Image 1 (cartoon, rainbow, N blue to C red):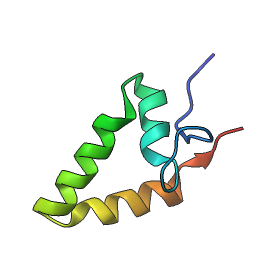
Image 2: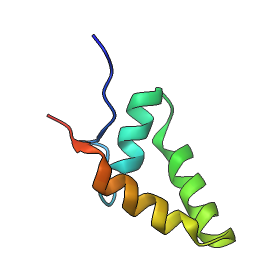
Image 3: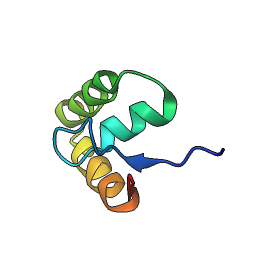
Image 4: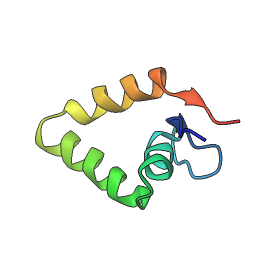
Length: 61
């Protein structure tokens, strides 16, 4: 079965983007959360990237 990138229904803090990325890549979602926080602090682009992913990723079933 092919994996599909979706927002997490169980492991979410805001929209479930980091939880979904963690499930898809089989990595701890805390790593993705840290990456987004660093991107927000350093360049401010983390917020835009998170919002785009939140809109583009489908809901988990």
